[in-house]
Length: 474
Image (cartoon, rainbow, N blue to C red; front, side, top):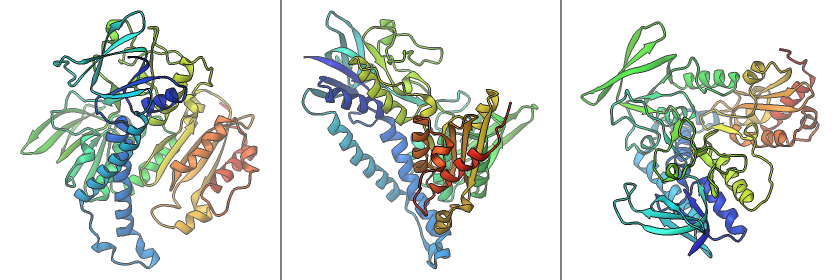
């Protein structure tokens, strides 16, 4: 059978593309190495990490804060790691069944295995699917008119580290609490996973090559998160690089180098490498077909997600940019629309929100104050602190009154960036994303009627403060 579309990789981007293709009546071949939909996000990333973060948040909240509500006994609570991991697996299994249902049905075939594009003929592409990545087995051959590559990314590595150190995948499946977890990388992955194990009693140290955590986030978010996590017991080694590491009797000994040539040694029971993600190294036959890659190994595409090879498209992490599940999903829909001749609005990077699911949460969309300063663009700023918010006071615990909403706007009052630190920041950022998407002004936001008492009132107050503020001129 000749399929209209072959989707290789069924993570969030691939699933969105399959759903849109089937809605438009296309026949689809889906190939994924796991044999289950959802990709890294569902099986090794977003979903399992959020299960662990929520479970440990409940535990720490019960242990530390319920006395303020007259609820006692927190100090006698325990958390069983094996039960927590079982809960994680159950959530993944349930969502995987839902993902798989999208890949089955009329005019769709889902195949487990490693795909390799062997060439093309008059009708389209020949895709060989193998049980093993090495292609030792004979494989099964399928034919598709168009290819959509959505293979995601993989954790970045550090060559100076020995085998046995954890990446973000293995850190999600520990069967006991580490004594001392050393996290290499101060990005959102390292801080989220560090939070999980810190709440359960692990000593957590973060090693970061830059002078601050959360590179790319607004400066006020970086500072607020550093303060909050320090209060929770994180220790920091900033502006240093890992120069060497050896293991002695199950203990990791890491040598760190400073800019002034000084060295220090850290010892840890567990080491997590969380220095970002990189392009997959899997050979799928695309290079042999002439598909162009950039110097970092990401597939090069145009605004319609087409590669330089006619009939081959790519979306998600494998094309670089922001490596976020929701970005991949948006690209999956737009790629199918493009293939079907529909001209849709471009997915703009500044309209893609980012959320860090620590406690407190942090969320951003649009431009940071740092970026506006670098561009020498006049802008206005308004800030509302949650300590002035009634709903934050009613929540009362776990830092609900710590944090803020910051609204940035161009000189003409159009909102260009929103940055939030606090409880439910990840949910609040949705309204801010919509404001940027439709070019709302601070006046538009400040004149709307917001429900009371809600945390979202802080967004309105911050917009009002920005509306009344004098512009910052370069």
